[in-house]
Length: 220
Image (cartoon, rainbow, N blue to C red; front, side, top):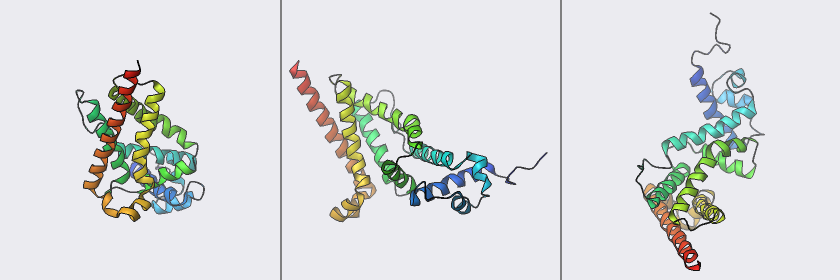
């Protein structure tokens, strides 16, 4: 039997190390400035292992984005374990809690959130795949929740606008964290305060949706 081409007795572990190391470096330097040499060195792996496991740097980057998103989704699922009888209000709170926790969880690696922020500023072709496989299913779930909360009163455009408003509220706490901490202190990002922010965004959004839906119903 021939030896493994990389003389590696644990290829799965090597692949995982490459993903984690690449995530850190891509988040620090961006896709173009990161090198396969730096990534393989940090992962304590043979430089050829990147080609062996991923094909090239572009494919590695796409896998880093997607695998990082799936890891945090596994840890903070958008349904938060709700059953099939949960209300739309409960579903929205679970969705908001999951979303905020994915970006603000202090116990996990922070490179994924930083890499996603960098990708929004300098999008690559990998974003198309991330949207298709990860973001679009989440968006469709939120659309269903908003439509349910509206009692079927909203058009597709209104559902989309409300969903984007909810996402905007959640992203604000991540993208504007340096300003928020300087205004109100770092305590806003401890677990108890994160729970309060989750409840606020949920209640604020539900009341707004209900108010608009009521107005639409009265116009008919």
